[in-house]
Length: 154
Ligand SMILES: O=c1ccn([C@H]2C[C@H](O)[C@@H](COP(=O)(O)OP(=O)(O)OP(=O)(O)O)O2)c(=O)[nH]1
Image 1 (spheres, protein in one colour):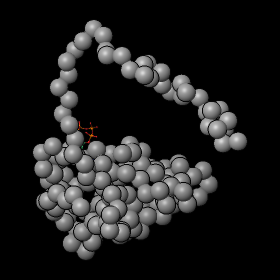
Image 2 (image 1 turned 120 degrees about the horizontal axis):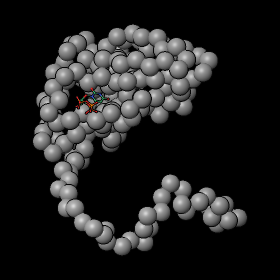
Image 3 (image 1 turned 30 degrees about the vertical axis):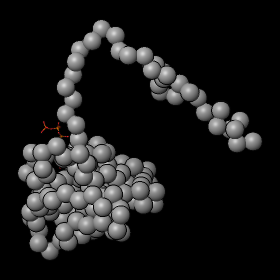
Image 4 (image 1 turned 60 degrees about the vertical axis):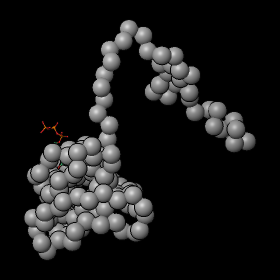
């Protein structure tokens, strides 16, 4: 198991320290510090009660929970949110209710997002006139199409 020590301040000692729901999960669950009701289509910045200090060379990413997305259409506006190593403020989650009919109730303590800690590289750009050739080249945005998958499946 790959681990990294991360200093964490509990801004609300009644909320649990974020942890994995199951051993081996990539993310640790972030809890809502306050209750909020999201009307259909509404968004809100929800506080999590934790602030962290990541080691240099790391970042943390605030990802949606797929269960909330599948069951309620609740996601994160800026998914994944980026928590920089130098950030010392409270981690906030920009939750959005994409459902067009049902409001979504967040209760204090609910698990609203997951935080994934990753090593990140700092790019050192070397400006060139031509990029090296590759098999894909400049094809993107659905360039390969979808029909091939169906043809192979039959
Ligand atoms: O989902 C998120 C995303 C960001 N942050 C915090 C940590 C991050 O380090 C800081 C700034 O985020 P970002 O760089 O994405 O925001 P920006 O709009 O570029 O603002 P800034 O000019 O402050 O960098 O806000 C969160 O708490 N939650």
